[in-house]
Image 1: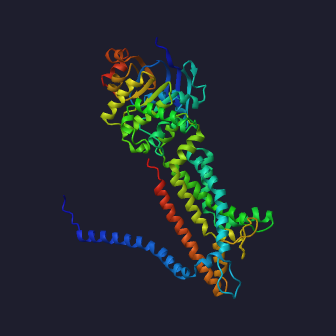
Image 2: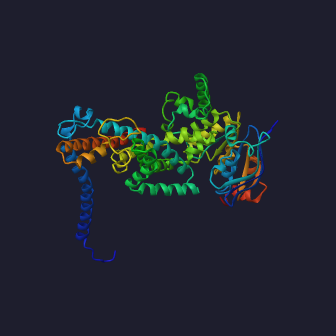
Image 3: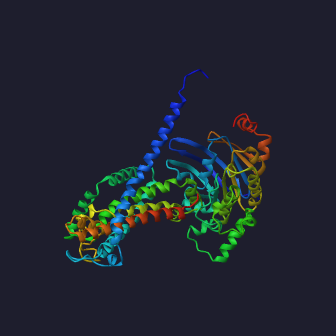
Amino acid sequence: MKSIKINYKYRIGKNIGFQALITVLACGCVVPLIFILVYILKAGITKINWHFLTNLPKPVGESGGGIANALVGSMIIIAIASVIAIPFGILCGIYLSENKKSKLAYWSRLCIDILQGVPSIVIGIVAYFWLVKPLGGFSALSGSVALAIMMLPIIVRSTEETLLLLPDSLREAAFALGMPFHRVILKVIIPCGISGILSGVMLSVARIAGETAPLLFTAFGNPYLSTNILKPMQTLPLLIFNYATSPYNDWHDLAWGASCILLIWVLLLNIFTKLITRKWKVQL
Amino acid sequence: MESTIVKSVNYNAYFGDNHVVKNVNIEIPRNTTIAVMGPSGCGKTTFLRGINRMHELIPGATAKGQIMLNNEDVMEMHPIFVRLKIGMVFQRPNPFPNLSIYDNVIAGYKLNGIKLPKAEKDKIVEDSLTRVALWKEVKDSLTKKGSFLSGGQQQRLCIARAVAMEPEVLLFDEPTSALDPISTSTVEELFHELKKNYTLIIVTHNMQQAARVSDKTAFFYMGELVEYDNTKQMFTNPTDIRTQNYITGRFS
């Protein structure tokens, strides 16, 4: 080796410095989540009890009251959004993974990417003009449609990416047995990719569970318990939005409790997704 | 005594503009083992995949000419029926990873929605696995997933899966190239057994394998069928100079 002077100490020092930097930054990413969790849990967990979950909000001045209407409303609206978006999204994802190079695939992939970037409030406005105005009033259904549009890109892309990871040999094995296309998809491709598809679905549900903007002028909110999907309905994010911005302390407490519930809900969904992905993963 | 089961007439296959199989005419007698050999990229696999219409699954792939199965043109038939009559085993073992060993064997029935009574299914599974010499090894673990087996066992499972459908012809696309020597010899022994009931067409890179297992050999070069003759004749006294050069290892 030529006698180039190398300052080893300096190099080693730089090395350690860099490793320390990335470690610190990695830890830094955890801080906001921990902070939010602790803050909301501290403020909200004391408000949560059976009474809180099963009662309607009380008028201003009366203490107590709960968020039953928002819980039920959120569940109904998310369920309807899922019913619309899941089949749509999965089938579209299948098309994209089966026809990688077709013109239609190119355009629909592009549209879906753009759709993912559309601000949620804009989707709310669109739902307002599509459904609320023609139907003549705010409704849970229009909220569901807005949320379904938000779920769609997540489900489509996760389905497509999952299926693209499956080896071609799997499809060939199925085709070589004389299976028609729809059976190859339903009996082989989807069962083998089920964990990835499900995790996409769950993540999309977690994603929309906290959406407020598209619901502001679709589901609108409702201080009473309603299960009619053609009428306005309360949801957790709407309740938080309305009550947290009100001037009353009792309502602030409700908002904290609801935030806490929403947070736990999303957290559980994420954990559940991880478990399902691990449990149902097909070893290729 | 020998009757023709598969016959190709002026068969041509293309990938886009790329002409990969050129005007192949070949007659394959029933209950024989045919080895198809040739250097890489000579069109042998494409020809094989043409026989059961798997070729056209690849985007941009087209084919012209006739492939006759029992005097019926498979190019005119629906691919689904063709593939029920002509089974296929691939280069890499590809059992369905979501199915048990048992279900993998009857996958051709199960996944096609053909309902069978339990007793009949059991019989098919046992018969098929016995024919590929796998029954003794797996009979206590039929409910385990197919991917639980070793590579060689998986390949035999895939052969059992093809055999279970009772096809007339079995196509093998370099069936042992992903296997170790011991598994390879097990699979080669199988060929001798399977020949009694089926017609086997085996694509292989390996000349020794072609010589060991086949009755007749076809030599492909640059998309053409150069020579097609009894294996013994071919390996001792080839007529075409290109075959001679290939067999003596002057190119590969």
